[in-house]
Amino acid sequence: MNYWLMKSEPDVYSYDTLVKDGKGMWDGVRNYTARNNLKTMKVGDLVLFYHSNIGKEVVGIATIIKEHYPDPTAESGDWVVVDVAPFQKLNKPVSLQTIKSDPMLTNMLIIKQGRLSVMPVKKEEFDRIVELGS
DNA sequence: GCCAACGTTGGC
DNA sequence: GCCAACGTTGGC
Image 1: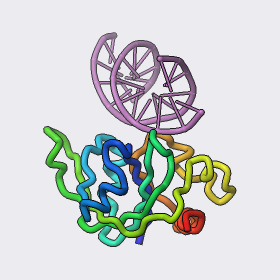
Image 2: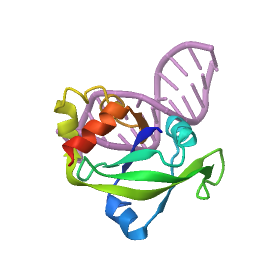
Image 3: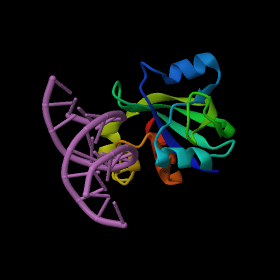
Image 4: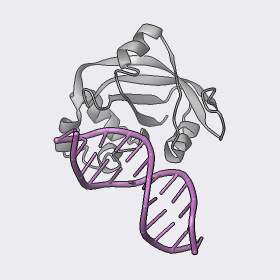
């Protein structure tokens, strides 16, 4: 079981939209590091769903329901998508500011590598976010 | 709207 | 293969 964090701008695709739809295809990734992370994901992995730009907070948890397959929105190149479903909405969102100020979370890639949209998260970090959001 | 960070592109 | 220029992301 692995843990991840994925970013989405909520006015493009929010966690609530994912809940409403029941499931979603995570398309549009055009970064090699993020793509390689998508390829590593397994069914059942848990994902922190982060709202970038608007909100700047982790709002819920999603789970992988289908492993990587070719991105139908890519005109060329080796790009992939995964399918995700909502798993658990956080009672209270965990803001970027909270993450930055929590001693247990200061090594998270979301702080160190601000532009990466799909990144691995350690189990301790995942558990800590869930704790802060409950 | 600005700008820092950083990934990508292209000339050499 | 190096590196300068450029483009994009995302926080502020």
